[in-house]
Image (cartoon, rainbow, N blue to C red; front, side, top):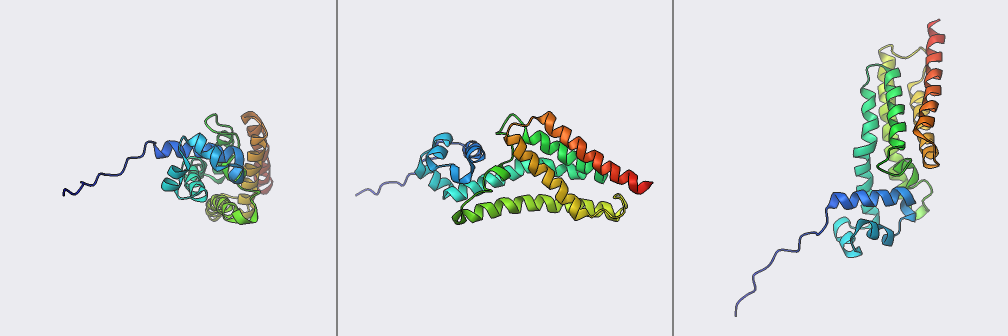
Length: 207
C-alpha cells in the first residue's frame, strides 16, 4: 500500500499588509467596539476562519493594526523632534500632526483617539494600549524639551513636562476637531496661536 505524499498547506490567498490596512480603516471609522467581525471580514475580504488563523482574535488583530499605525503615522510626527531648536521641534511636531490628521489616505482624525477612548471595562486593555502609545509620544516630547532646557534653549522657568503635556493636549484636541470636520487650514491656524504664545513667553523672559 502506497503512503500518500504529504502536500504543503494552501498558501494564503491574500496579502497580509493589505488586509491590515483595510482593518485599520474599519477600526479608525468605527472604533474598536464598533468594529464588528462581520464588518472587519467584509472590508478585509477574508472569512472569519482566515482572520482567526492569521491574527488570532479581534484584539490581536487590533494590536497588529495599532503597531502598524504607530510605525507609519505617529513615527512621522516624532521625527519632528530632530529639529535643532525646541521651538522648531514643537512647530514641526504640531504641523506634522495637523497634516496627518487631515490627510486624504485615511479617515480624518487619529486612530489612537477614536478607536478606544470609550471602551467598556472588558476591553480596558485596548484603552490602556492606546493611552500607552500616546504617553510614549509625550515622553519623547518631554525628553526633547528637557534636553533643550539643559542646553539653555528654553526660557527660564519653563517646565519641560508641562510644555510637553500642552503640546500633546493641543495635538489630541486637534484630532477630535479633525474627526468632526475641521480643515487642515483651521488646524494650522490654531498652531499659529500656540506658537505665538510660546514666542511671547520667550520674548518676555529675554526682556
